Image 1 (cartoon, rainbow, N blue to C red):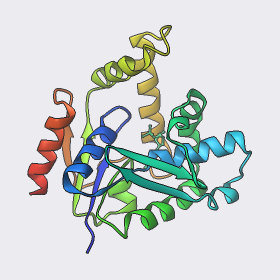
Image 2 (image 1 turned 180 degrees about the horizontal axis):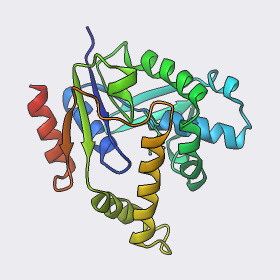
Image 3 (image 1 turned 180 degrees about the vertical axis):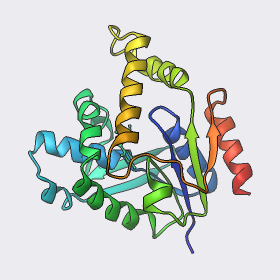
Image 4 (image 1 turned 90 degrees about the vertical axis):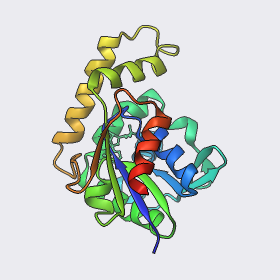
Length: 211
Ligand code: DC
């Protein structure tokens, strides 16, 4: 049977860098489910897609040496998914129960046929509750804000660390308090606080549990 490793956790907890490296070390596929919600947000904003249209989008993830390329209807779309307008609206889109149920089907379809590391907010609780290894990755809001600030400061010099910390707290609140599949720690998850670990060290810790 194929193995699924789930990594859930809040914004800027390092899920995607960690998940990507872990998948590479194990020869697994890597799926970041946040990008599915980001594709839905982009299509809703730009193409006026309704919920019923979202199901028709052909979403594929292709692992290419050091990167995972994400395709929507055959078009490589990675660099559009973190545009500010997408980031601004994605939490609202991800809170819609109908959208979540479409996305749930797609996540299972994509993950099942292959050994997969899948990252998100509800992967260990809702999508693959029987996964062989579940990680809940976290770090303090201050450390996560610092990481995010370092990423953003070149393109958005007007932002302060305090702005970013406030945004992180707001996103955490939306992700944990929404009614449809809020972010929860799976009961059987290993909780890993990586406030003082880099990506490599975090992956090493996960590999110890994997073995
Ligand atoms: O991880 P991210 O920032 O790309 O996620 C974008 C949004 O989607 C964020 O508001 C949380 C939400 N999300 C979710 O609700 N469930 C998932 N499995 C993945 C992301």
